[in-house]
Image (cartoon, rainbow, N blue to C red):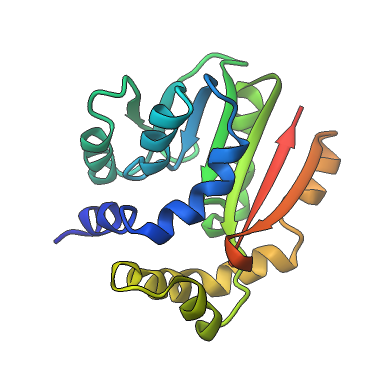
Length: 203
């Protein structure tokens, strides 16, 4: 099984839906959505069904996007491959909601700046950028108490793989200073029993 298929299957586990819940709740019904780093596009699949959104997912990984096309069949949502550090192929102020899940904390500072500046360019006035990241907090014992089941075993791999970088991101204050520098409204909420956080930027 290749990594893209593994990650696509991982997103079908019950814990992953709980991880995404804060983003789903924050997304406006019927919004036009851009999902950056969409991967196999589980978030867009859920939003199309439950929030009746329109939109598109973008990613740099062709194999991930093949998995996404399977998940999104019949939803009307499309996906597009992009190249790193290139301008995204959309008009200014095109999207009401931009989601960035499990992505920013893994990027270099230059790649993060590019992602956020492009997001601001594409965001409609009054829109929101919703960023989901792990916190790197918690323990294996708490993770087991909250989420253990045979369907959720991959959560331990996710926790181990993200803990170090996520902790650095959270300790630096996430996007709060970026929001102040760019005169954006900012709010943050810890979710997923303390293992994740949602940051929302509004223009």
